[in-house]
Image 1 (cartoon, rainbow, N blue to C red):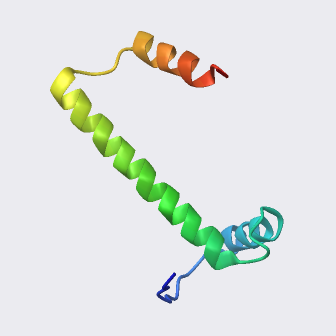
Image 2: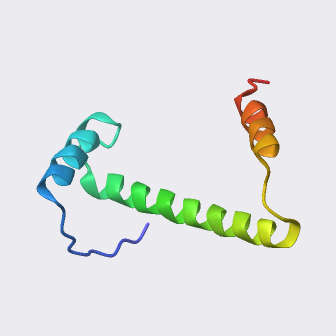
Image 3: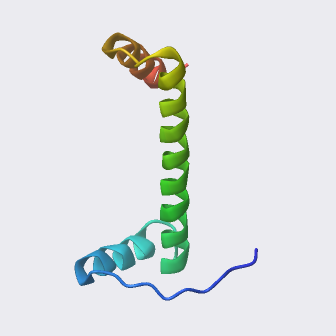
Length: 78
């Protein structure tokens, strides 16, 4: 996979937590991989939020009852 190098800045506390996470969460100390995965996750969440906004614009807001049903279905281990 091709990569592009960038220089980024961190708050010291955030960097310390990220480095610790990179050491203990299967990244084998690779901070770049952890940051890459975090940014990719953020982009997926933004895409899902956009899709939800489009759906609600067309069909109306999702009700509390619909959200509760979705939560139950997502929690179902089937």
